[in-house]
Length: 623
Image 1 (cartoon, rainbow, N blue to C red):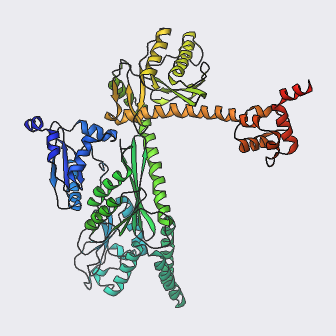
Image 2 (tube, rainbow, N blue to C red):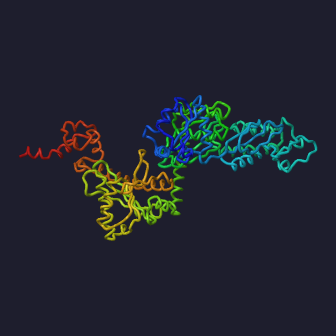
């Protein structure tokens, strides 16, 4: 393998790439497959990795580890897709978007091919003549559903192979009303099949019709004075209505489809999928993609489809994606799912109506699941100090950073410049120790000078032992680069303080990318997702706290202006003036006629405004 790495000339091999569809495999120095991709034109796609520079951090890291590549040509893009799916499944490459929560979903199997079918749990649909309903979220859900259904639609649950044996002894289920005992010939095929059909209709989402049918039979039995049978049917109707109340109606039609949405939040991404059967949500699940927050949602969606439906062969006729996708991918994924299922499947990005509403609901649930996951991860990491230990290792700190102070600067151009200081104690935010600073020594925007002023005020108070500032931090994290780090070191040298300090730098997607040391060395955070997530939380909190204060200052400034000193000008007329003329400066320059023409202001108020801004002119006229 080493010979292949040493003798591989990437530029020479790029020139040999064919202009045909196919699959490419990227290898690292050990020969390990680290990425598998498909291409309509291999030459263009593979070259793009080495020619363009607008890749995500994940792909940039992958490219830096490529030592050689190989490729397999195919006759079509669809063949390339099928081969790509198989190779991803085989190699589980590090830099592909992988469905780590990959799992099979249980189904309800009805053996309709038997003379006396039974309902049971199945872990995977088979081509055995049975009908399969699902998928369901868990085996517990399937078993609970089966327990409910056997009270409404009594069918056999045993594995007996001989049915219709006259004189056979029925089991306990017959005596408690949960099985009609076809084994003992106590029910004929036609009557038994009637119950099977009703159970299948219910599982297919046609429940309202079943309720009507059962209620009709109940009334007929009551009318013929068969009250015991009518009472049994009444209880079945009640049970069905209870089940229906627990199901959320999503559509006015009885369609079957799956709908999925991808949500991204800083570091991670989440995909939520709803299983809709007969117009009702029968199950749902979500998948977390750690470290994929900057990955295009369409890439995550297509990766999910390829892996999920390759393992779960039951696919409804429609799949709705909340996230937009290229037309070429929509067509290709539709073809792929159709091949997996054995029937035509349409992939659709809904634009309006009920399906758009449920797709948006899937997105909202994906974002909620992602936020809960990140919050849980941050809590778990902070509470047991593991993330702080990892952070110490990443940055070579000599001691555990139990107290971290993070700083951020916020401004509105050259006005309302402020800064935040947030504190993390043992990995958790300590909000009672947060501080805000309004920059005093600057009239224009200057992030470096602002940071220096804030840190100077903070450490001056530390030296004096002022309450709220007397604790020495174990680590300083500041939003910015080398210049801000230099400002921090100058301040600490001034006060004789020595605290490790790093700049929190962002990537092109405005996500936390790394921690920058004053010597220019950058510690890349994607190498450890827990540390990456923690630093992102710190940076976001410092930014949030700074922005929050900045908004308050801005609102206060806009509430207070020179107009407040003018007689007869209240809040409403002040807004009228600003809306009509745009700024206080233009109001000052306006002549009396212009002011009088402002609708709603009034002549008296116009004269008051004009007189206020032209006092000097009037006094000159008096002289």
